[in-house]
Image (tube, rainbow, N blue to C red; front, side, top):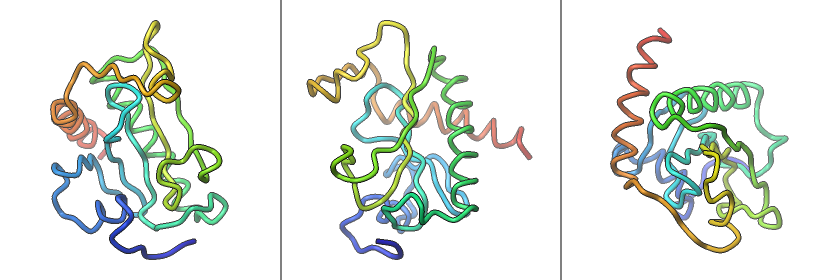
Length: 153
């Protein structure tokens, strides 16, 4: 499936909306964007999402792939400055069988990690250890992103 999607896709709805703070959209690129995960595995869990609605990895254009990786790198950079994680998990769950919560629209997870954190108990046991609100994390990350973006120009 590729192309425009209706109101049922949360990522497509984020793209249509102009209220980035309400939707926790941190950055909009030409072909992809960065958004905070509403159901994070850890503080600062970000998603890099192609603008185009599709669920087939092999259908991403070279431009989409390139920008998604650039935004993943930017995500790691701002999370490192803001949250000081000791590592990261990055990956995609492609398809329902692979555990994709939103199987219709590809997205890349950027999950900050710390030694001794809860690992993936959030996924296996439905347990959450989130010591910061998503609103607080959004404000801190957005501030760092603006500073970083100025440095990149």
